[in-house]
Image 1 (cartoon, rainbow, N blue to C red):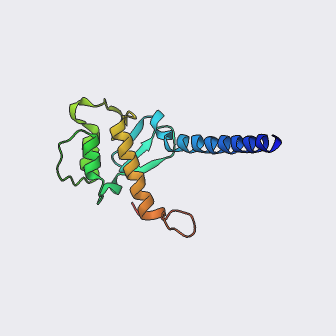
Image 2 (tube, one colour; image 1 turned 60 degrees about the vertical axis):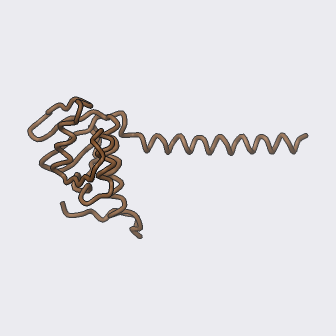
Image 3 (tube, rainbow, N blue to C red; image 1 turned 180 degrees about the horizontal axis):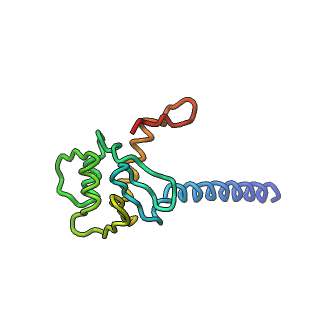
Length: 146
């Protein structure tokens, strides 16, 4: 009986540790969802408001994620080839009034954290990771000259 109790206790502790780890990771991946974004046209960056986290809009060029961006914005299926300016225009003028954009300064716009914008953020940061961080042996990013 004691062995079964020990095994059950060990399994419970392992389960709790795994659950806590997964909850912590989920919080990291969804950290952007609670804050609006700031689109800086002159800098060419999409940033999470109130943080120093920014993504380069140029990461969309070239990208195989163009059609995914279009899908999340409800655009008709087709071949899309976004660049920094066209992506910014899509975000500033979303079809069907998906969300409201607020101008906060010259060339700076607040965009709410809604699914289409969250997906753009995901795609831009994934592109950056794939191009500059994945496989980097020293663990640091090799920043592009923008």
